[in-house]
Image (tube, rainbow, N blue to C red; front, side, top):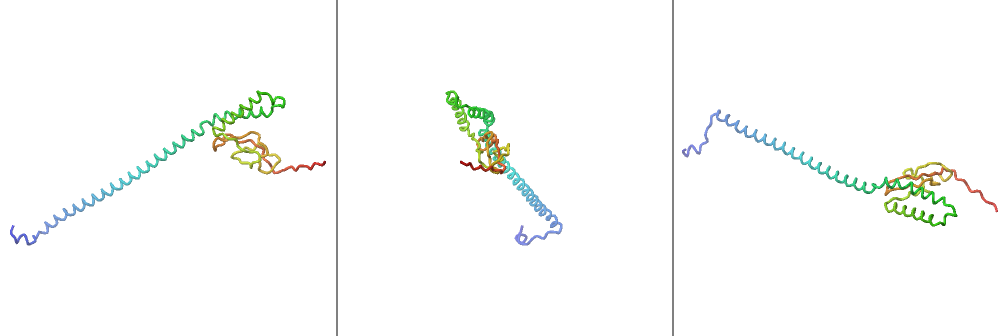
Length: 191
């Protein structure tokens, strides 16, 4: 090639120019195609990442719930045994309340009192507590009203059966008489 040919631009025929355009066009199409494929793959990647993050969060929530359930089972696993013992406590209390004066000083009655106290201590050591009811405001979450009687409105005037809680859950509500608002006035005594 001579120096003149190198310096002068070659004049191509119009056919050669049109044949060259599709090659350039094909390269641009290929680039656009690659860009679309890249954006699709990026979208898939973002979707996979989001799904992975949701799965991780679900797993973490599952582990937390399972641990809470295990804790609850450990805390309240003895509830049915405790419920079975409460009638025994009630029977002991009724028996001790009805001991006559002549029998009260016998040693076996003292032994029954001791057994009653030990049973209450064992229940208390396992977080079983008595529900306070007498002279308290009636609370339907803790008390079960059996009778309305004369007394201050909405106050518990008598406990018919003690109620108990295990930790913060009610095992058995207290059976109570609730005041109906008719407060009897004491008649003055004359001397």
